[in-house]
Image 1 (cartoon, rainbow, N blue to C red):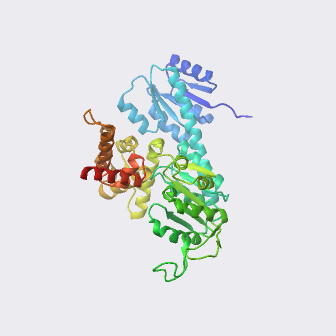
Image 2 (image 1 turned 60 degrees about the vertical axis):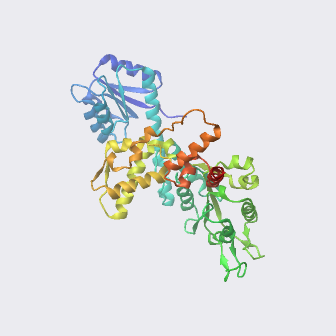
Image 3 (image 1 turned 60 degrees about the horizontal axis):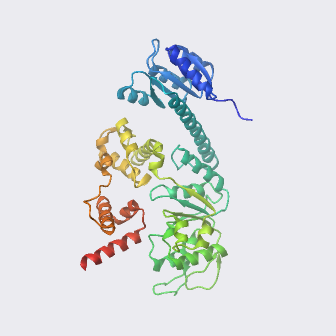
Amino acid sequence: MSGPSPLLLVADDDQVARELLAEALEREGYRVRVAAGGEECLRLAEAEPFDMALVDLRMPDLDGLGVLKRLATIQPGLPVVILTAFATIETAIEAVAAGASDYLSKPFRMEEIKVVARRTLAARRLASENLQYRQELKARYGFDTLVGQSHQMVEIYKLVARVASLETTVLIQGETGTGKELVARAIHDASARAGRPFVVVDCAALPETLFESELFGHERGAFTGAFATRRGLLETSVGGTCFLDEIGELTAPLQGKLLRALQERAIRRVGGNDAIPIDVRLVAATNRDLRKLASEGGFRDDLYYRLNVVTITVPPLRERSSDIPLLALHFLDTFAHRTGRPVKRLALEAVALLAAYHWPGNVRELEHVIERAVALSPAETLLPDDFPLHLREEPDRAPRLPAAGMTLEDVKRWYVNKVLDEAGGNKVRAAELLGIDRRTLYRILERQATEDEA
């Protein structure tokens, strides 16, 4: 049996507006208490707990902002929507800065009121779930590395809590810089393997000629320069977790050897014949669509299905922009502890700037931007001018096509070079912005260079 419906508090000195609001919200299934002024609103809040309050900005005895501040001490965490017939940017900023969860202008559109009520209550529920899962994870496992209270992050917290105690292989998907390694570490730290090694293997960074030796190890004399037997990274991970980052970059031969190791739960060192049993939990990550890659023949189907037992998708930062202020504050606190300096603050305008940016580099880019601002600004409060210029120019960065008359191949060449310029010549960053892997970008640039020479 479900619990009682949410209890809402409506405070407005205008009787018609007050009754209209109460009637509309009750038709939506909510329970409603009404107050004709600010002081009555506070008395009701002291008498019973509410799930949400809708408070008029201008009331004769105590205005909405005064009510908002007092409610924060009577019922901490209560979401408050400010209502006003005198909507201005100044009052909106003041209300939000004072802690209002939303701001609506009169005359009301009933559909808008219903949407705001549903959204505000859903956000309160998600925040409560987020706190519950984070407290559970921290209490049980000492895990507190991921930051965010968006519904996407709450779902990730749930998945981490559920898979941590299992030995299941986990595939983590997401764009570069979203925090896939943090999720992998959270799974390891919350598991029974927490006291054992967590070994990271960057599949994109190791040359193919060295990868097999690095992953599986080698016997003495296996190749020129192999003067001693050496354990590979999988052996080093025994008892713990091996995190294979960017696994989509593995070549076909290496995919086959990794699949055999997973199936047999044993490895063979380069130059060796003996199977060495390994007790390792495998977590893999990729910024590519492995399903599509497998369907196109670029990744082994059998290895994909072996890895894709449980999938966790980490969303890009632009899809969880509500987490940006929390992440920014987290990084400010982190850098303060690291340097031994006081924690810097963010001006409201700076928060708005960070929230409006597209963040192609995701959480990693946000971290670097905050670190730069902390290092370079002498002030205690960070303003928009303390952040890189490209953040403030973001609205003007929409791509504009050149003159008409170009072939499709010409437009492709133009766009690739434009993105490369925007990335400052950094091919890795350009590939991320284009949504392709580095090798594809290298092939495109090589083909362009050949055509230019011809």
